[in-house]
Length: 231
Image (cartoon, rainbow, N blue to C red):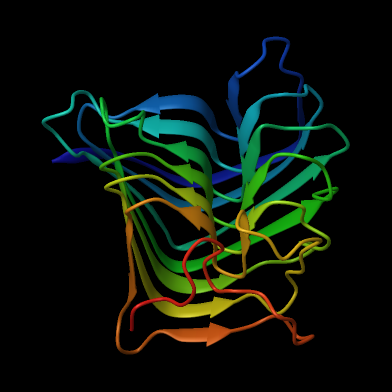
């Protein structure tokens, strides 16, 4: 059993966070899952004005109820987010800025069907992820969709799909991941074409996964602190 929200459209909302390390999102700031929850056919266009926050195009933070449970957020249908910012953020992402909460309240996020995030002004400091900025300990992100980013140029830190995968987290890749419009400023251990950084995380792809890399070839690992994705 679970709850759902469908056919959501939010246009031209401005979010001005006034507290450091706050969570903000186009639909939810913090979503605490006491049961499975689904979002389908969502369209959000937003501007983030407050600095030093964690911002997600749909959700700021998703977390479970307790360490012993792993409730799921499913994002499906044709969903998209459009985010504009001219400020420095701690983390920013197309779907969810932060998944889980340091292993205390892990969460599972699944994205299926079609998801297309668009960004304006991502050449700021902070950790970027096309889907999520931070995947916390024991949490799971499954991207099994036609996923295409737009406007993601000159990113200073993070990855085209996920910014940072923490200890014990899991990233599963499926469908088609199109990162042809995603470019980065740096080639260091906090930047990767797919994942910016990881620490003892499991990152793997399904056998039918299709990856379309950035259109201009560059010496940049798939995973900033590892190398390639296990396929």
